[in-house]
Image 1 (spheres, rainbow, N blue to C red):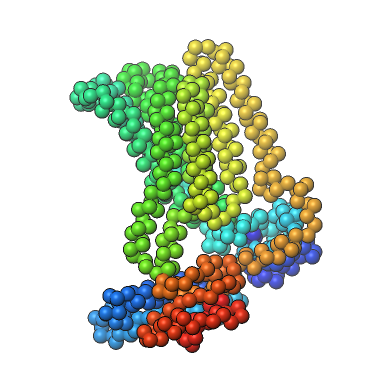
Image 2: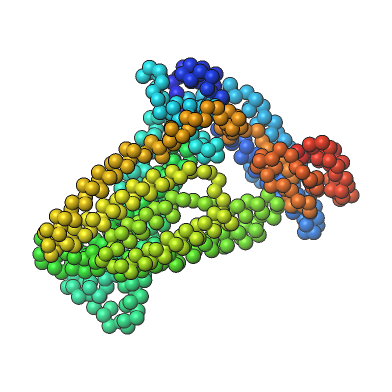
Amino acid sequence: VCMDIPAQYTDSQSVFAYFDGAFPGEVLEVNYVVDATEILDMKALYWKAVSKREGLEYNLSTPKGQAKGRPQHSPALFGSCRGVAKVDSINYWQSEQDRLAAEIKAAQEAPESLAPRFCAVVVFKSKATATTAAQLQIGPATTVFFRDLAGEPEAVNWPRISMKAEMAPVFSAISWGMMVFFVCFWGAVIAAVMGLANLQALADTSAFSWLSPVLDWPPAILGLIEGLLPVVVLIVLNMLPVIIMGILVKLERWHSLTVTESQFQKYIYIFSLFGVFIFPVLGSALLTDIQNIISDPSSIPTILASSIPKGGNFFLILITLQALFTNSLELLQIVRVIVQPIFGLLFKTERGRRKTEAFGSDQSFPDPFATSAVIFLVGMGYSTISPLICVMSTVYFGLQYLFQRYLLCYTKIRPIDGGGIMTQNAFQQIMFSLFFKTLVMASLLGLSSSYATILEGLLFPVIIIANMYLRKKYDNVIDYGDFEEIRGTEDDSSLTKSYGPKYVNPGLKPLPPYVNLNGVASAKIVDDVENGKVEEVEMPVLQMDVSTDSSEKLAAAENVEPQGDVVSAADPGEQEVQ
């Protein structure tokens, strides 16, 4: 994938000549990106017209709809108030569907009229050549532009690769600015939450003496408030920043959706590191010994070092809830369970039913990876102090493995292949966890023995040097693959030839063969026809055109004969289905 292409390269032929000069005979195809926003808007209107017409056809097929007769409406804005004549709704949306299909086809057949976006996808005959082209500097400095290995065809982030280079730092700064805001602001939120976990300690201080009646509450209630409630509130509150950062990261200039997911995982991890771990530890320490801190501020380092073991119970409850409660909610997919029946009442057509079933079915990796990294950090940090946390961490990872595997195999889909890009983030976060474990042990040992602190501190340079060595040795292998392995593939054109047409802007992809999914017909329809995954239907498709009279409906539904690769109905008004 090439971005920020110089202005002299404005079409596929010029980019093809540029790379063919550097790699003669190795370029298979070039798909230059143009501004297809208007075509995408027309496609959205096209599918809106399809859904409207099919919904009206379904309503007309019901006894209630037949009693009302054919639906009519005024197509103009506030047409009923302005006295605009009403039209037949089914015929109107059918004409809109036909008109938009013709306009989309005409626009797609003249891509030269669309404005260039100065980015392209170059398909080579072998992976070795593509890997080389993505890393080498080609040509003079004035024609060097951003190049990287593209993701899978479904993973190309078409709306963002055409973003101008000057806008990329702006959106990145917005995301990082919001992240800094959340990290700073969330300190006050976590302090309030940790106040619940230390009610009795706060009630003993003069500043919070108004909480003294809390000490008279039953121990069971105090135990629930101080033990369970803070963890539940923390989990719920931490969802808000994750949702907002998920919206912002999609606005950044990443050429692949897998890279976007990787960046999102980093944001979630950084926020969770502060919001789930650092702030709760600091908040618990400061609130527990607030009286000593007020009287002797110089004791803060000692108090912080000695308070780390006291947070073991809090994190034990946190990991237990994540292992048993959060994992179970994800397995149950409670949102889909609630939403799908509601959508089922609203959307009666076959198309609406499929959209309802697909709601929330995408498998997302950033959140599970980030949460697992933070739990690994807690488990490592407290492995010596509170061994029971190791047990619950193991239970968490075991259930996470089983649940994620079940979801991915049976109830969710992964529309894009990330190629293991998350493992690079996971490695860095594991190394940070080792570093933090050493820091915790050095702090604790420093309370009793300076020699033990020195010995523990010797592990710091070992971890840092090991991290630098492994990153230098394997970062490029993770990003581009092992060149010693892929250079043996002299010509993969038989495999890559099918990739070329897939790397096309969605706006330039032709509309799939139309299949009537109004839900009136009783025949089975192959799902992959609409998605363009197959080229022909292996069985006749029965459909009912309710725009005809009732006497003609049965004839249209029954008299369907296969004709080569096209299945057409006896009624000449029926749409042909490939």
